[in-house]
Amino acid sequence: GEDVEQSLFLSVREGDSSVINCTYTDSSSTYLYWYKQEPGAGLQLLTYIFSNMDMKQDQRLTVLLNKKDKHLSLRIADTQTGDSAIYFCAERGNYGGATNKLIFGTGTLLAVQP
Amino acid sequence: DVKVTQSSRYLVKRTGEKVFLECVQDMDHENMFWYRQDPGLGLRLIYFSYDVKMKEKGDIPEGYSVSREKKERFSLILESASTNQTSMYLCASSQPGPGEQYFGPGTRLTVT
Image (tube, rainbow over all chains, first blue to last red; front, side):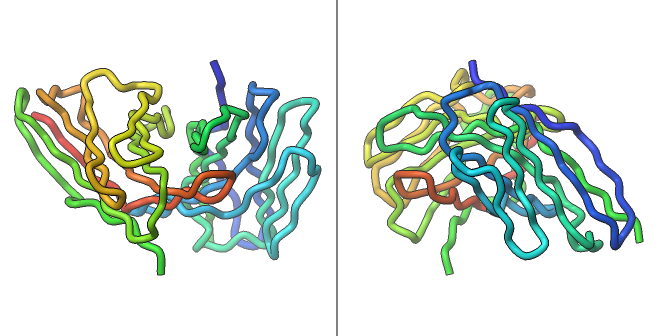
């Protein structure tokens, strides 16, 4: 079945760039997402990229997609302590129907040291 | 401001009890989802619904059932709670298509 994998933990210093990586197995993925979960809260969408794009930039966030290697990354420039959270990668396959069922990765805990 | 609310933030139940987790969305979304979140396992889909009275099994439906009698409300039912159902439960809703799933704050359920 479909699988999405992420490393569990990343530690960076405030002001540095963070790069969170994700690999997925479903070659029919149409959209790929990055969600953020702050402590005690639900998930919040950060950004998403369509599978025919290589890159998407949104302020401090840059998403890179290597479709050949099925690799997705999220780069956060000038990382702040407020960026400390769990980041989930998710993919939406071509399942048809009216739903948008997502497959989520395990999540990467980003710890930002002051 | 879009909103998904869940009936409880924290819940403690005994083994064998019947447990209801309620989720309400105010965005008139077609799709609603129940996930459980466990450390190191990420989010796993339990059930989803794409219309009133319609439901489909997700990846881990065993031990759970759902009910969607009204468009805005999606309930998760644990018929006989067990300790391995201790987890964080997250509800989400969305419109059909590639758009965002909006999540509630989660219910942390402990079964003793």
